[in-house]
Image (tube, rainbow, N blue to C red; front, side, top):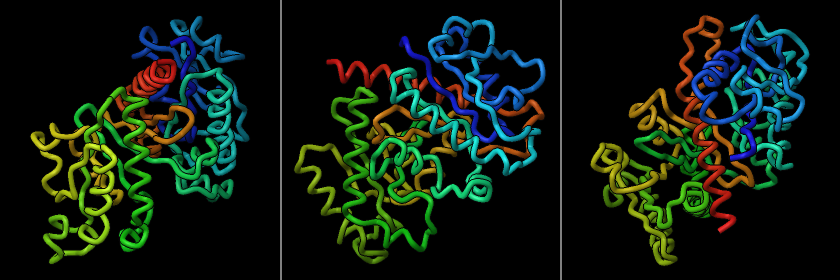
Amino acid sequence: MSRPIALTCGDPAGVGPEISLKAWAALKHELTFFVIGDVRHFPAGAALVPIETPDQAAAVMAQGLPILPHEFAADAPAGQVNHANAQGVIDVIARAVDLVQSGLASAVCTNPINKQVLKEGADFPHPGHTEFLAELGGVTRSVMMLMAPELRVVPVTIHIPIQDVPTALTPDLLRDTILTTHAALIRDFGLNAPRIAVAGLNPHAGEGGTMGTEEGRMIAPLLDELRGQGLSITGPLPADTMFHPKARDTYDVAICMYHDQALIPIKTVNFAAGVNVTLGLPFIRTSPDHGTAFDIAGTGVAEPTSLIQALRAARDMANQRAAHDNA
């Protein structure tokens, strides 16, 4: 891969600066990336090398973490929320996307943000990264996938109250989620015939209608339709029996009906190495699967494994997409 990965700083008062430096130390001889952020937000004496353009990152990677400077409104003491920096966080994400779309970077990897800080400090209108990236990419909707070496999961509905899930869960939404996931597994992961497992909404997948009717009324007929189009799909399956090791061997991704149905199993199976991937975008985007961790920011104990895995995933997906598109 000739083009580097663009890593956003995330909320500079969180663990982003610390894990970025740790990821550089672990990956400096394996892949090339640069962080976009304010030098003031990194520890004094940190191994940083300012660059003017992304193509300079490779030459300095062994010396220090390449940083493409982006001036923020204020300092960012570790663990201290500062709403003055909210707009800077948003602007860095947009800048990273622009660099990828202009061909200067191969993928976007995003450090954690705090949605409340962005809403209160800059009227951020989106529920999170995923929806903002969809807007930047010019798509009406993107799909969130969480993955670890042992499991990939996709929630159909994401950041909404559980009471709103049955209404939000429409045939069109479920169909779009499955088809977007199927296409991404082929284009970005190199799976020629992805095996997709779909969970039911209700306990025991409705148990024949005695515990809910969504499976029989909507989910099962839609899965039959997609099987008729040639997709390899099983379900609707009881969510409580989908995630043990033997079951996971039978599919490449699990489509889940709501946020916790997807995130609880993957964070239980491998909490440290989980990666958040946005599917359906015109560019590659990955992220560590954790938050800003203001409570431990600046203490030196932040675990970089998820960010390391996210950067590796960004590299691998960018390479696979390029190979697929050029085939």
